[in-house]
Image (tube, rainbow, N blue to C red):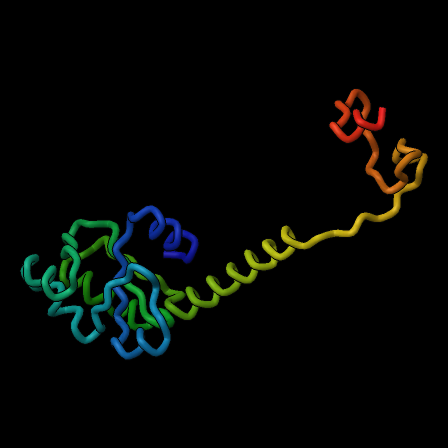
Length: 162
């Protein structure tokens, strides 16, 4: 599953993401919000648990074998692919994996935040007006004023000057 689809489906709540890294990796590197951690070495046993035990151990509902909203993830796609194969052997044939893993996720999120910050900075910056030729602006009183469009409604400030 590509990054764009994963992020859209996470936002919609239409995907269940299982991170198969070791718990210490999540602490040290971070995690994708909403992911449930089941280390790769525990995947086979975990997905054979009865639903109640699965829910108690992992704080989420156990997926059904025909569910198409199950996605595995890891750091860079290797372990999540192994988890995908394990789950398919157990009969979860519609499971997918996120090959970019946490490395791609964190890199893409960082790029998106930087882009948002740059946009935010641009919107919040104060621009100084540039001088405008009197003839261009149509306003001989204030040569730095922007051109007055034809048939425009005068502002209250313009009315006081009339």
